[in-house]
Amino acid sequence: MLTVLVDKAQGAVLVKFSATLAAADLAVLDRALAPYAASSFTNVIVDFSAVTESTLTPEHLRARARREPVLKGRTKIFVAAGALAFGLARQFTAQRALSSAEAADIVPTLDAACAQLGLAAPAFVPL
Image (cartoon, rainbow, N blue to C red; front, side, top):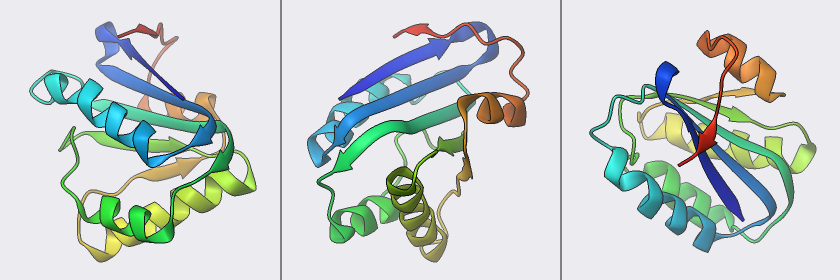
């Protein structure tokens, strides 16, 4: 399951995944974000901290990492607090680095992601 939130004033998108992370969730995410590819959003936070299970295969993660990002040219940060979330984020970023595509940092909390992006008191609302 996923929720997409934005802070228009600070140009940030927050994607929060929860429960089971599946390939279908990533397809829904791509469709939700596609209309904003030409927008002024400059920062993207993907929060995996509430993910408790994943049905993504290593092959799917590799293929996704090699694809062109929907929000190309944005600063991206993954929030990964637990072992499962960190493993998924790390595998994705490692594969992304091999393809010379845009990198994403991994941090343990949403607060750390906001601080790294310089977001002051973000006010995320549903997209």
